[in-house]
Image (cartoon, rainbow, N blue to C red; front, side):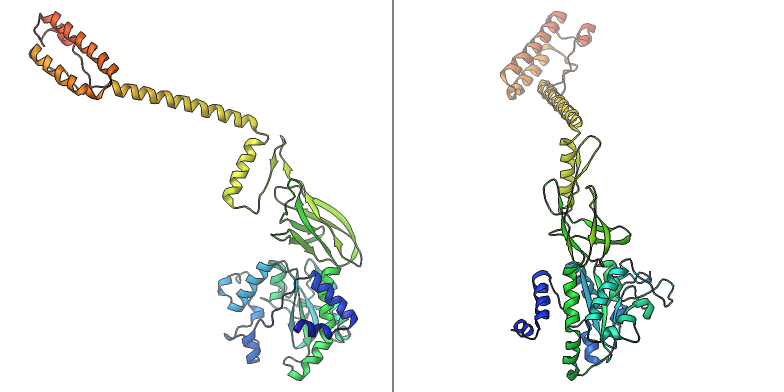
Amino acid sequence: MIRSLFLQCLTFSEMFQAKLIVENVHLHLLPSLNPDGFTLRKRGNANNIDLNRDFPDQFLFLNDDEDSRQPETRAIMNWSRDIQFTASATLHGGALVANYPWDGTDDKRTFYYGCPDDDAFRFMASIYSHSHYNMSSSKEFLDGITNGAAWYPLYGGMQDWNYIHAGCFELTLEISDNKWPVAAELPIIWKYNKMSMLNLVASLVKTGVHGRIYSSGDGRPLPASITVSGINYTVRAGRTFADYHRLLAPRDKYEVVATMPGYKSRNTTIWLDEGAMTLDFVLDPEVSVKGGILQNVYDCNCDSKSKLEFVEFLWGSHFEVFFVFIVILGFLCILFQKRKKVKISTTKQRTVMDIVELDSCDDWKKKIDEYLQRMTAMNAVERKALHARLAKSVRLIKANGQGKFNPSSPSSRSRSMKITR
């Protein structure tokens, strides 16, 4: 119902822009970042902290601890990084101007300090200003736009943080000279800013370069990076569909470069006039000296990534390494089997008996009988072989002592048998 009523209030041109936005843009609305301050009619939140000075700042190096931020600040930071917005606008009161980065300077002085995408931001701010009822005719700000640092430097603002850390092109829009307008003024403010808002959002579709990035190997989307020669800024493609949206001001030509670890970079020169351009990239995997493919799998966990790289290493250009690995493994298996057989054979042949200092053949025979009783655990072949060896020893003892066992005899001692377990 709200959408239907909203569309009924639009003119034909406004309807065209709204249709373009609905069909091509994912639009997110945050009614208020500082509800406590709005209710209390003050800049700070309930903790009396100015939220637009609470973000990490590139010029305040002791200002990086996110855990010390206000809950509203942490919430908007997490939201921005999760969604990966292409562009955003924050609406303020107290002036009538479209403000763009940078908001601060490295030496705290007040002067024009543009960011790497200064041309694109000036283009976006101008779209809003010139679509507004009277913003572009401002006597304070030329064309109704301003660089933040040229107006007054501030630090810890959301605008600069979004551009640096969230990949989001954000404008700060001061839409009313009255800081606290009464309810009766809101319809007028809406009327003056309605077309500006529609044109600004529609410009994200009608300008810049947009596309997706794929692998030539299997056609899967790649979360690659997009850079433009001469502009020190990187836009990253989406993690799921690898779609990118690079906002650029219209001019003669740009050189667009797509890069991804594990893939060859690709660059294309484009001519960007008054209109958007669709540009898809297909990246080839990098090839090693011997022709093996080296791939970098970003959408897998570390374990599976290591397994894939190991398999790729074995089956790629390193087949000779794989062959040597198999030969060594086979040799170790054979050696292990032989040692196992020798160990088993030696164990089975060991006995539990020591023959020592016996006084007579009768004692000898008793020991043999005791031993033979303990041979029941052996198989038939082992018992037969060991029995033959013992019988031979007995014959030798009898031959030496004519039926008497003489432990003092040199020949007896030299032929004594010691079998241990």
